[in-house]
Amino acid sequence: MLLRLLRAHLGPYRAQIAALVALQLAATFVMLYLPTLNADVIDNGVVVGDTGYIVRVGGVMLALTVAQMFCAGGAVFFGARTAMGLGRDVRAAVFDRVQSFSTREVAHFGPPSLITRATNDVQQVQMLILLGFTLMVSAPIMCVGGIVLALAQDVLLSTLLVVVVPVLGAIVGVLIWRMRPLGRAMQDRLDTVNRVLREQLAGIRVIRAFVREPHERARFATANDELTDTSIRLGRLMAVMFPLVFAAVNLSSIAIIWFGAHRIDDGGMQIGALTAFIQYLMQILMAVMMATFMFAMIPRAEVCAERIQEVLETETTLRPPAEPVTRLRRPGELELRGVGFRYPGAEGHVLRDISLLARPGQTTAIIGSTGSGKSTLLSLIPRLSDATEGQVLVGGVDVRELDPALLARTVAIVPQKPYLFTGTIASNLRYGDPDATDADLWRALEIAQAKDFVEQMPDGLDTPIAQGGTNVSGGQRQRLAIARALVRRPQVYLFDDSFSALDYATDAALRAALARETRDATVVIVAQRVATIRDADQIVVVDDGQVVGLGTHRELMAGNETYREIVLSQLTEQEAA
Image (tube, rainbow, N blue to C red):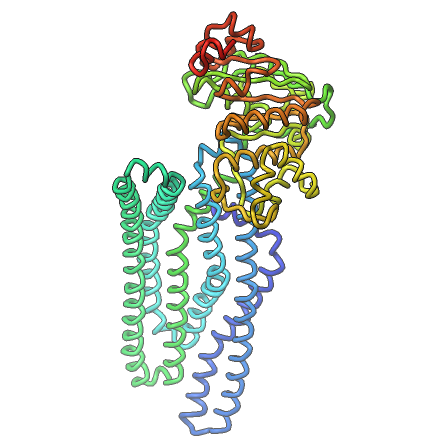
């Protein structure tokens, strides 16, 4: 998965990678050549007392060192740019894919996991690439080159490498094999911590209202301890790895000096050659250590790449049409034909055989008991989910065949839980129409009965809005969400219980203003409050996912028992009449 992810996103950086490899090659070759020059200085300069030779070769070594410094710096520069660019591109790809998901795919992964995959997981892969380009490119060259040049210094002494290098490889291999499952567990534990923390922040009022702080502390402590324990287990393996590698390096150095001293004493080796051999041994083992450090990161990065690739390879159930329809046949008309909906793996249907027709200039209300499927029904119209049976038609065209941009311009929905984004009142309202003027915004606020409280704010339309709109009341949030939909001026308005936080007077004033503004549009209202929908042109009564009544308030009161029970639970017989 890691290689597949890298192949898919490193293509645009071929030129930078080529420059990086060239610079790393140059720097590594210089590093490998310096011990040979050092050996020449010792054997041909220091031992015989030739100061001129020492100065000449020393000058060459200094020039090569400066060149190596610039090559290594350039390699790090290109490696950092490539790694950061890769991280940016992968994050953008994950974000774009998540934006195409329906509520079904988002629920499958869960928001906390998607956040972790788009941030921490990408960061792990990015860090691996950064260190890989700055370390791993030079490590194999240094290791192979060091072995070759060590053999050139003394073949007999080089037999020690036959023992040292395989031992180091075996140590690293066993530890990496143990680290891989812990890397996956780390990311899963991180998902859990994010989920618990997100739930506690979102539900802080409920937690305090029911005095459940001790319980939530225990939940977070459990998730946090599991993450800590996994981190410690992974850290122990990494902590064991480096002492073992250093032990092998130091024991190898002792062995080289011991046997090398005997070789010098026998006349089979010069002092400069032994010095160069020790330096090449250090370079070989340094290359192995760099590879060890990289291998320690690979298991977790590989797991992160699998999680990222899982998101990128998940196809949305809301597939765009192959040949999208870009023109409505009957503008403003909304029709449902035998619509059914069932969640994946669910035993029964949420909606069954729903049929209704709503025309421009009409207000259609949907009412029913809690859990009867009203909000699910409404979500099928703007194609937040796709019906599993039947057809949803907007403007005479099945929404699955309609151009998504045209559908978005045609239908505006005010959700049951209105959400405002960080910014200002103006920036939130312009989600409906980015080109709307201030006059358009004030008109929408006036219709939504929000103009008065916005005018009283110090900065008016430029008043800051916190994330989620937490710095305004629930009723103000609802009215701003309604104004946002009005700014768009769509042909179909969908209000999903959007008046529940309003008092009766504001509700009545808002509905009267809406009736004037939307007289040429189709309006669908889902509501629990009978007073909100009693004047609708047609009322759809939904019970257990089915339409059990359709008509005006007066008709349903006379002939539909389900509607009559709902009404009489809120109004007296005289008020209902």
